Length: 255
Image 1: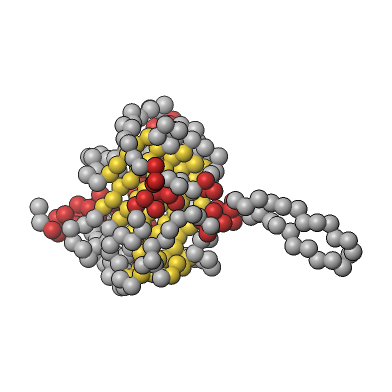
Image 2: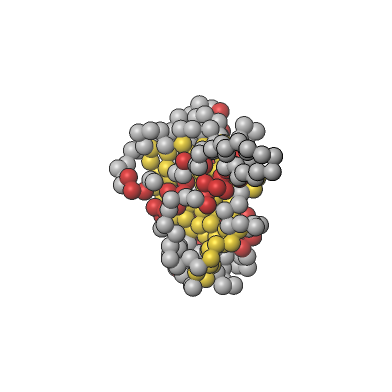
């Protein structure tokens, strides 16, 4: 198989059958979203049919897994006294954004700036894709600037029905096993799937997709990718274990 054949196979597996020529950032992200939708639809269908997947438990380091209390201000002694009340986020989007902003993770030193899309803050969430009528979803999308170019980090947080499972490590269209995909289940019921795709041609982007389905009926999809050319960086910048830590953030609970 030639280098070009490998590139076509990887991109087709990740984003469908469209040719990679002329990809821009929006097109690339849209294709990634379509793949997520196919995976989620398959998972939801499996729940409806009561098809329980057999999962292989694999030993992994616990280092891959890694809120503020609301207080009452003292009563004012005079009407003119001003007090500052400790407040908590007033909406799910704000709560998720605060969890991301204060996440106890180590961002790589290579990242010189994080910019939200549409923003205004890098940690802002908006309403995202809903895989079923029983789901609730929010999305954060940020640009990660590095000296070698930019990458895109997308985080989808979903409230999903009981019995939802992480997708199998097979192609959404080909149904063939994905060579660089890992899937496991932990004793607490958490399911993890990691799919890393690195094209043979370094001019095309590495794509890393982490999916975590938690016992609290929360599914988190964390995807790092980029565009082709135009100042984009093809290589991964966020370590996979950090992407998993993001997916495991307690503040992302939707259940």
